[in-house]
Amino acid sequence: MKEEYKDFVGIYDESVPIDLCNVFVENWEEAKKNNTIIDCTVENETGPSYIRQDETAFIKPLSSTIYPKPPVDAYFKFLVECFKSYTTRYGIEFKGIIYNDIFKIHKVRKSEGFHVWHYERATPEGLDRLVAYMTYLEAPKEGGETEFLHQSLRIKPVVGRTLLWPAGFTHMHRGNPPLDGEKMYITGWFNASRIDLSKVGGE
Image (tube, one colour):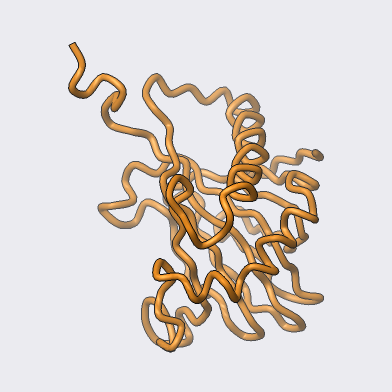
């Protein structure tokens, strides 16, 4: 795995094997038939098409039937290695529990994507998010960059490349549309639990 850091954005090339990325890409049509994916007949997820227009699967790693369990487990092992490298690089310590109970997979075709500047803690349900992550599963020939506003940074999608960044307002970002080809990626958050869940109901 190759590591690079730019303004608290961790870039990890060759972090996930291409063969594993291909498993998720090949299983996309199967995922669309599962009950836990949003209604793909709806034009967009959050508003007019200029805000968002792509297909999104919401996946719970511990109970998902969208994808076979083995590739999900394998992906998270690689992701955790990126997270360990990130926290070591910046000396991040958290005395409680850090968890990830859901992630998303996006399929983005030409001109689609989430083009509005946003950050990952902008909603009440997102306040526990500590670090966001993204892994590119499929990359277009041109376009589709992940762009960070205040860092003046655009990162090209590369299959097997993982990004980690702070979930707060310092790292406003957006997805630029693919210009030639399609993009698919996994994204989610490492959440910081407000209580030690392991001690709930204990002595």
